[in-house]
Every structure is written in C-alpha cells, then in structure tokens.
Image (cartoon, rainbow, N blue to C red):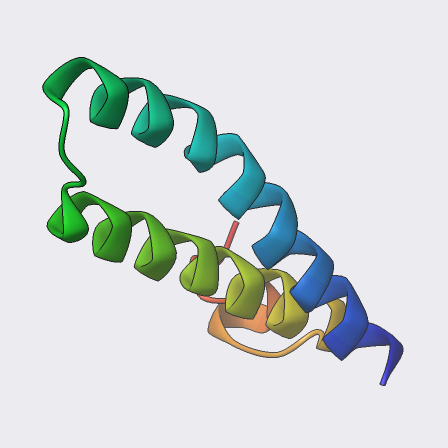
Length: 68
C-alpha cells in the first residue's frame, strides 16, 4: 500500500508542476486547450505508475516503466 501512495504522490507532484505552464498558456490565449491538459494528465499518470512499479521493484529490470 505504501508503494501505491508514493505513486499517487508522484501523480500529484507532476500535475502541480504541469499546472503552471498550462495556466499561463490558457491566460495568454484566452481559452483552455483541453488537448494540452489531456497530455499533461497522461504524463502525470505514467510518472505515477513508473514510481509505483519502481517502489515495488517490478517492471523493466525491476526499475519501473523505463528501466532507469
């Protein structure tokens, strides 16, 4: 369970870091780019899954999704 919580924390960290440029771009353009939000969400989820697998010592060579 601890590994899953660490994965969720990584999703939140990555989401918060991605939020800043998305908000700036939205304010500049005056509209919300949902495609950009979807891509940012996908990256955050993949980052969280990678962290979770890394903590479980599973995945590619026991190092998450990327193997590094």
